[in-house]
Image (cartoon, rainbow, N blue to C red; front, side):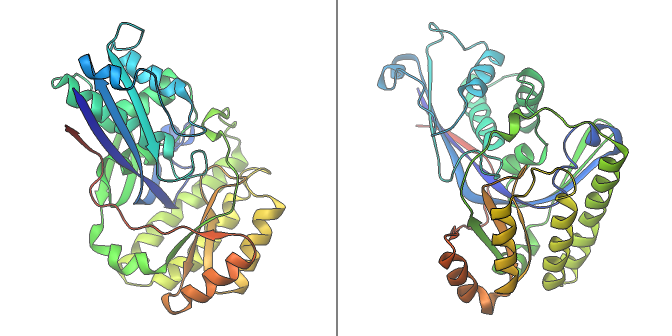
Length: 314
């Protein structure tokens, strides 16, 4: 049997970091993110078809530990399991798009398609718990839920439950303002130890969290330019969380972006390097992209992914 699955990665718009423990478990998390068509693709080969790809084959820079832990959870690891996995990613791993979370969702979905009546029927939760609890990786919950549902996701975490609100009706007004760039580099943010939740850090995360309902109100009122200005505020707050969030190169790229039409923007993920997203008025988009390219920062073409995870037997 051959099963193919795919799951989108995401642009984290507002609230990043508030979905990570211990803050999320103690004070509740809230994020706004958009699933995009830079997807994780998984092929699961089982039974006689396993010989068509006898070894695990993962994207460049992918950590195989997640694959093995997920297979362990389904009792399918080991040389006699009759299972083989290969995958590819449309983007760059470890660069801030939640690619590990999307990969976990895609693999869990493929395994559930294979097992049919698996007890791990909540795909997003299963992928998250394996990554965070079994592996001890320090990740948030928006990655798996956005990969599972697709579209524009408002995530609220509290009292041991997660609520997902899908706002796809707003995507057409939001997407023309978003520009995704790659500033270079990768990191293993999931392996970082959770930072102590000091009073100062808690207060900054509270402020970042408070921006999420403001952004949603602006989106509802079609005040997209104001969302760009709000993202600038969010980025200034995020830089207070750690000295390693930004770098001189990222600061230079951000200031160059602001001088050439960006209303606001941010570095994706845990910081240091990788993808950046900017709010740019549509009529200034081409000029902005050209000016950023002059500094070696390339535009990444994308579209919103409304489908979420998909799995099918070939």
